[in-house]
Amino acid sequence: MSKAFTKEDSGDDSVMPVRPRASSGEKRYITPEGYRALQEELAAAQGPDPKAGEFTELEAGVRRKERERRVQELAAVLEDVRVVEPDASQAGRVFFGAWVELEDEDGGPVRYRIVGPDESDVKAGRLSVESPLARALLGKEVGESVVVERPRGPVEYTVTAVDYAAS
Image (cartoon, rainbow, N blue to C red; front, side, top):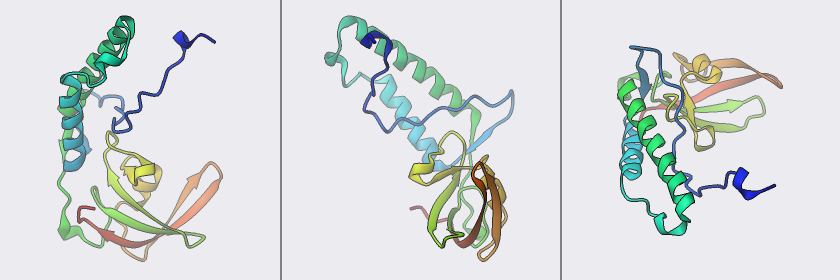
């Protein structure tokens, strides 16, 4: 297959995926850290391309268009989000912005932060508030369990710790 029809890895792992925009007037939640990360990505996308000299003229044009599209997406997302400060007074109970430590049925520990959909990345421990697991966890306290239906069957998790300190 011709390289012209393949997408090469940009090597930039810091890019946050942009989710579809909220419906008119609906704000999506985001943590202060997620908002800052999107602002930084927007500033970088608006600035000079650090890889500008590495491409042919045609490739540079394509890359420029991709960067312009990303700027528009990021600006739209930043306009559609509502920053929610974690509330430390909620310690011990799972709400938006909480760091939650869980134990699965096998005793394996996992740690997630409940975040907005625009900043979610399960591999990095950031779980979208819209995900089935996060929805099941909201309002739970240490010691409580939830069962989440997954394609491979139900999985039970027990909340072992909840905190709102930045990690």
